[in-house]
Each structure stands twice: as structure tokens, then as C-alpha cells.
Length: 311
Length: 311
Image 1 (tube, each protein chain N blue to C red):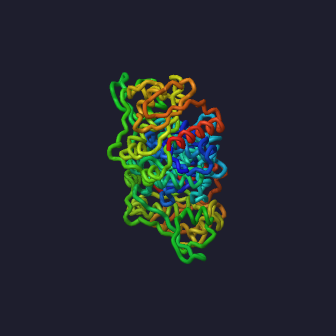
Image 2: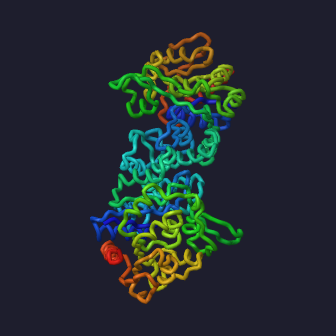
């Protein structure tokens, strides 16, 4: 079975680990979000790609869900001692090595998709990981605070401000000119099903779907989504703050309606959301909390079963 | 008193620390060697500038004489886990921060001299540290081994091969087109004396003197040199391997003759080399081993006294 997943960071990565356990023989291609990518200290950081790579490769900090296990922060402390900004983004020493290699390869002219493949040579994530695009895109958030209305990088809003200032708008700068990375549309075309893990529907999956050509290609396939909202609250993270910015209620029903029946064929919700309905979509209720790998595998297995029914 | 020193790495830096102790009120400008600079993993590394900066700024690893005190090597280990080459150059995590900042500033268009000034804002070395040039130069070493005759970067010869393969030639690539960095010739012109610390006469001081305009400017001043050779052996390092490459004997006499009486006015030698003579040069013998800061201060004080006599 050939499966394509669109994935953001922590939630997507944990779901993927479950999927790999539930369907060890499946050929899985992951299309990773790059809208959160940021250049810090001259180094290119791809938080979502790295979270997927580290999680599936066994290098993740299990507790926090991002960054490397057994991480140290000497470089970051030294940069701070030099007075370098920003200091609000947590880059560990092990993680720095990844960004140093990525930046060296990007500067040498390799596209991000090839860089990601080279990094995965070490991590062997057991899936094919492709960035949604090799082109420069960046998620910006329009906020209004004491300094007035302005657009800031998603990471500044998410990490520095902890999404405490309401987002008026969330914009993927560069989306119009971006093209799917090599292999993205091919993988979708060859897929038996596309699964949307419980990643952020706005700044992760929503971002991937904004790259011209991806949404149409995905919508043409059997698509099963796993609701990132359980009983009116995000499973994790601050998806509610992102949904508010696009005028979508924080509910499994509203997120499904936002994705639309043209995109989604099957929708996996938590048991408390079993009453969710949308014409043209088969809704199935299951426990959706990913306590551990086996819980994630149960959820992934349910998504796969639903996809098989709908194929 | 205004003093200019030409300096390489460890020997120069330790001498400078002594000079600062011997003449705390002197205005010292250090012209640093950049021929050893190397780009590793896309980051620009300036070993000699950093050794001076860390030593005078109190951040040096005292035992090894280069790199940062209390250093860790997590980034280097991670780069190796990715299979990145080279692995023979010892870059520590604290040190990486310096190279990350330098590279970011260089890529933003700042010349190395301004980058060095910015880094020194943190270290406050108590001297003005200027790279010999902002232009790209690189010391290459011509060797012949089982792979034939070829030129390799100085660091590969020095660090990886430990100078075990004879150098046939040592070439400063880019020297002809290089210009002294802003402030270099001005500092020399305004100096009461120029001191050559016991740095490597070939790949440190010799390199600096190869930048067009610097040797002539220095030769016009009162110049006192401290012999890097004591009783036929380098005080430290592998200066003999470099001297052999340029056909100069490893002796205080031969190094003085190589510098020449047109350049040198006073020559400080160790007591066992008291018989060194060159017409036009005043030779003074003193203990020259820099056991510690106070020994270095004694030597620097002797160099200063000799300079004052000759001014």
C-alpha cells in the first residue's frame, strides 16, 4: 500500500511513528511543512522536517516532542554571551549540527529536498520525507500590539509570544510562486490514500495545501483526516489560536467543514465528537489521544482501515 | 607609547599577554595572521585571530593554548555522526558560536576587520586586533606523497598531517592581490616601535609581511624581534618544518638573517644563542621561555627596553 501523509511537527511525527508500526510494509511518503522554517544566526532551521526526522529516526527528545534527546545548549549560551539575538528560540548543540550541514548544502546550491534526503541518510526514518516545496516560503502572522499592526515570523508569534497576542491573519509569504518539491505530486498521484495526521490544520496542513497544485492533487485521492481537535480543544499545541485567525471554531466539526468534503473522504474523531457530520464524508469515532507509540498505532490503524473502506 | 605587534597564534598571544602586563598603558595594535583561516562546514574559522582574542580575553584553554576553556564537542560529534568531513580539525561548541557569528556577518557583507572588532566587543582583549587583510588569502603547502605532488591547505598539513610530510613550498595564495586591512598601515605609521613576537617566522609573521605594503611600512620603523628558536629548536610548535620549506636553518641566527637587517633593528635571543650577530642589528640575550604570564612579561619588557634604546 502506498500512503502519502501531510505532516507538521510533533503531532504529525508521533502519528507517523504509529503509522509505521501499524503498517510496517506500507510505502509512506511524508510531505513536510516548511512554512515554519526560519534562518537563525545565518543557519537554516526546518523545525517540522527535523521533528519528523528525529522522531522517526529515534533521536527526538521524547518529553518535549521536538529537538534532540540528551541535548546540550553550549552554542546557544555562547551566542547569548556575544549578545546575539534572538535568544527565545531553543537551539541545542546536537540540533545545530543539522542546521550547519543543511545551510552548507543549501549554500552550495542543493535544493532543500535533496538536503533533507541527505540528512535522512543518517536518520533512516523509514518513510520518504519530502519538503512541500524547495522554494522560499515563510508563514507570517499579522498581529497588533503596542507597536502597532505588523507581520512577524510565525516562530516569533508561536515561540516568543506563545501565541498570546491574537493573530489577525496568517499568511504564507511566497505561496503563489512556490512549486511543489520534486516528487511531491508524483507521490500523491501514485498513492492509494492520503492521510492527514492530527497536525495543525492552519499552519501545518493548511500551509502544505496552499502550495499550488498540492490541494487539487490530494483532493483527487481517497483522503482520511484525523481530527486535531477533541471535544473543543486542540489535542496539543495552540491550534485554537491559529483557527481563530482564520475564523474557524475550535471543534472537530468546524475543522472538517473547513477542510471541506471536496478534500476529505473519511474523518476520524474522538468518541466525544461522534456526532460530527458532513455530507459526503464518513465519520468514525475512536480514542484519539496518542499516549504512546501503541496508542498512535491504533489511531493510524483506524485511519488506514477507514481509507481502505473508502478506496 | 604606541606599539604594533604582528602575531600568529599561541606564541604570539602569550607574548601579547606578557606585553600587556609589562606595559599596561601602551597602546597596542595587533596585526593578526589570516593565512591559516579555513572554511569548515560552511563556517569561517580564523584560528590565529581567535587565539589572540581568547587568550587576551580570558577565554583560552590554557593547557592546549588554543580553543576555549571548559570546551565541549557535541556539535563536532554530531557532524561526524552525519559522516561530515573533515573530522581532524578540533572545533568545540563554544568555539562554534564564534564561527557562526563571524560567518553570518561575513555573509551579510561585513569585512573581516569589522567582524573581528565586533567579536572583540565581547572579549575586550585590551589591544586593537586587526586582521592583516580583509581580502581572501590562504596558506597552501606543496607536498609530495603517495598521491603525488599537490598543494593542500596549511591546516591539513599542520593539523591532519602534523607536518610529518615535508613541505616543498609554502605559498600564500592571493597574496599579490591582497591589501592590508583598514587601519593596518595607519597603525604601523603611527607606532613608536614594531615588535615581532616569537610567532612562526614563516607561516605567521612571514605571511603577514607578504601582504603588499606591510613589510615596507614595518621596515621603516624601529623593529624588535623575539627569536622563536632557542638553541636550534622552536620554542613551541613545528616552526622547523616551515623553515625547512623555505631553506632556512632552524637557528636564531638563520631566522634573523632571513628577516634581514633591513627589517630588524633589535633581536632578542635566548642566553644559549648570545653569539648571534648581524651587522646593523643589536642582539640582546635573555631567558626566552614563556613559562607563565610573568615570564612572558619579562620577555616583553626586555623587547620594549630594546626598542626604546633603538628608537
